[in-house]
Length: 339
Image (cartoon, rainbow, N blue to C red; front, side, top):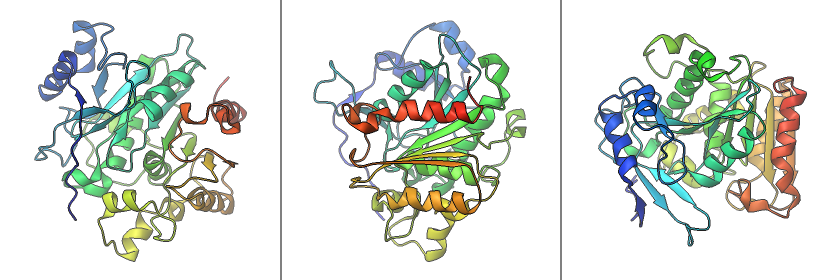
């Protein structure tokens, strides 16, 4: 399969962004970045990212030559950004610290069809909205399976497991209760989060340091218009092709269908979808719901008549689906995971 990326158009490569990339290459740690440039941001107003792997490069990506690039696709960036990132070999977290932290933490995996990682709609805006409610939010920029990494289909899960373990390892530093750390994924990021929720203990990488002694299991899970199944009848074709290639075997389809990996140990889950989703059929959420229900895992499912796909928060303004962040917060509180 030819997974060559299309012309990316205008990009962000600010001086500080270049500095961060050089720092990652040199293995500079997050504490040094904060000391050198307190309060600095990448590409205008984004939090300073920090690497999740020792040395920066993820396992199996040492020989990958793609370059991390942030692309702006908004027609009016001065009014509102709509960016995404490609070419990731040094996955990183962006931290959204609440003014009044309540001890709850959330790892967010944005979508992008496994071809890109959406920055604003499914990352930054989620981080800002939920941190305003007291949640300490970490947005993960994860590696993409079509970039030539040795472990290909498992690199997003490697990054998600490592990020979850790192959050717990540094929980005291960030004022986080290590027993109240959830995960949220949107679209293809929903497949990453669903994989984390069902394969949190899968040995997809060799332990790197003491952080890898911590559990990668989320305490609660949210899948927002998620890619779930690789069944060709309902799969998002682009995500399936990026993850598994053009002609995966039935065994591969089954192995990467997250609904088929649900067990009684899968975390309590919040599911959200629009019935008119033209990209990821609502049957994806329905299958995950059915698997959870069968396994007697606590689950809450919201299907809205209208919303389409990839709406994040901004895309459903004025629609009933705009209530979803409040519904999610109420659900987390009902679990006892948030005051």
